[in-house]
Each structure stands twice: as structure tokens, then as C-alpha cells.
Amino acid sequence: MNPYTKAILSLIRMISAGLMVTSLVYLSSCVFFAVGRKESGEGFLPLALKSAPFVLGLVLWFKAYAIARKLTEDFDD
Image (cartoon, rainbow, N blue to C red; front, side, top):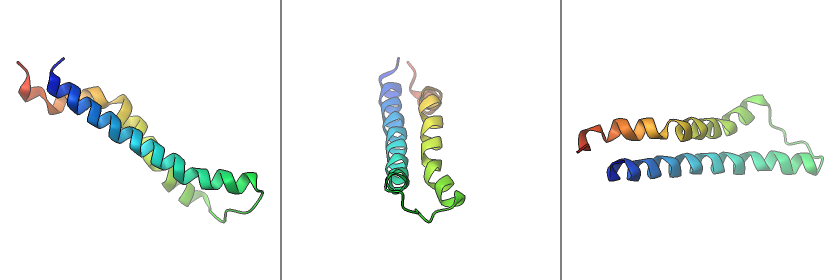
């Protein structure tokens, strides 16, 4: 594997992991409200928007190699 591809692959996976962690932090407030049996006051749309980075991170994680390969195809030996 090309070293440039490895570097881009690591960068894409780090970005996708950051998106997933950020989304989990956003959603953890809803879990804390549910454990404390308090009303969070949020409907479906805010929860869907908070989970969108997690879904995007998963897609990026699974497609990372294809994206890295496409970005570094000009640097092949």
C-alpha cells in the first residue's frame, strides 16, 4: 500500500471516529435525562440531527479505503 494512501486512510478514519464520538456525546445528555427520569424536552428532529454525525462517521469509516485510494491514485508508483 502506498504511504500516501496510508496517511489519508488514517486521517479519514480519525475524522470519522471524531464524528462518531461527538454524536455520542450529544446523545448522552438524552440518556442522562432518561436515567434521572426527567423530561429532555426534545422531539424526534433534534435527536435525528444529533445522530446524523454518527451515521456519517460510520459511512466514512466503511468507505475510507475507497476514498483514500481515489484521492491518492495520482501518487501510485
